[in-house]
Image (cartoon, rainbow, N blue to C red; front, side, top):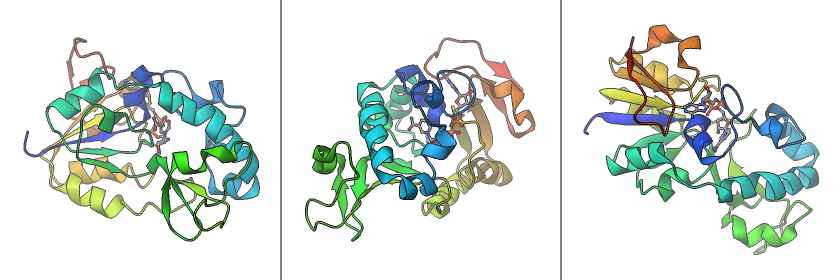
Amino acid sequence: MDGIVAFTGAGISAPSGIPVFRGHGVRWEDVMPIESDEFFSIRFLRSEPDLFWELYLTRLIPALERAEPNPAHRALAAHAIPVITQNIDWLQEAAGSNDVLHLHGHAGWVLCPAGDRLSLEAVRKWHGAAPRCPQCGAGPCRPDVVFFGEPVHGVVDALERSAEATDLIVVGTSLRVAPANQVVFQAQHTGARVHLVDADCETRVPELLTTLLGEAGEASRGRREH
Ligand code: NAD
């Protein structure tokens, strides 16, 4: 499987029961009282830290914890395909993948204002209020995830990996979030074959693609050549 790289988004985890932001399937708006673009903005985290953390710990984290890897995560892991993911869940690692680049961070980790990285478990007792660091007392802590309005530090690494790919398997992403979506354009620019597995794939950027496939986690579905 040398040369094959996967680029995944919220749709790969949708069959596991984690809502998406856009497109086919259950949306975060269906389970959250606040629009996802607002909830995941750095402005909201800064202006309403207590409300943010209340919803984060009572709605978002339990949804991630209930989820288990589905056949799409497992297929990428079984073939040891390196994964660049926009997801903040840990399902790809739970499926057995060792090489996962989390472009937008990881919800299992928290950052103290002093810069230390802590496990989410370390701050969970602050339920109902923005947590302070249990080690140094500084606060508030924040999830180790990238919010809308923040720079994406991993993008250079991701672009380098996609530039080396012979094939990029793109799974469950609307390609609406920049600069993460540049991973796909970069791979195409450097001559990779781009294969899209997405429930709504025909409505977007078909000119970009070599192959269109169906939904993640349903390996037996028909294959459509573009
Ligand atoms: P998105 O929500 O913008 O788009 C999801 C895409 O997945 C849509 O195109 C939809 O049609 C597709 N989809 C839904 N069900 C599918 C299925 N069963 N098989 C294949 N495709 C399916 O997601 P995005 O492009 O990743 O951007 C959203 C941002 O929100 C990302 O940056 C990500 O960090 C974050 N996010 C993460 C999670 C997670 O960690 N699981 C969930 C929601 C959003």
